[in-house]
Picture 1 (cartoon, rainbow, N blue to C red):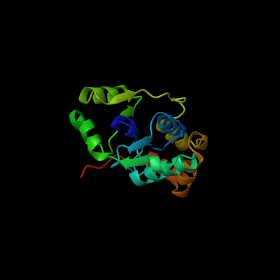
Picture 2 (cartoon, helix red, strand yellow):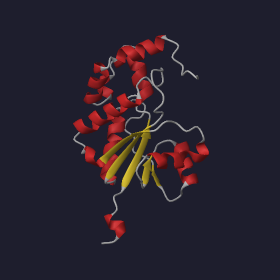
Picture 3 (cartoon, one colour):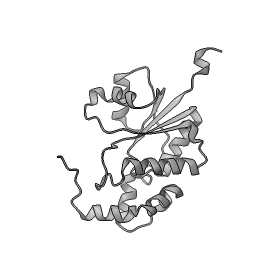
Length: 186
């Protein structure tokens, strides 16, 4: 067999996962149906305890791990990598490449992200994912529902709802909404 046939195909998904929701889980399954391995980049890893980013990178990694595992996904085929932001967009892709295992295809619904990737490395395949009800399944909507005291747990994998409950995440999100939780610049 040639090296091409023996090479594992890795798919990359990037998100903040604040929190991971059923749409993310559907995308992970989609990627693993197309690829041998999945790399989940937990973006904005340096941000936490602010209204837009209430959970730490470690908490988000735990949620993702639990959600994938409980969904029956073999974690031996998955990497979960926290990556802090690099605000220099001209070197963004090189930065991502330096932080994760080699990948072959990026799944992104963000037009700007797709443009950056294709502009910086035309050899990388970029796929626009098939989103599951994006208006309902998004972190902003879920955090808003939590703040309003409305049902939200049905929008995330059961393992994630349990995790958020264990860390008192609902209380944290509601407290951050009431406080001045902007990131501090020291």
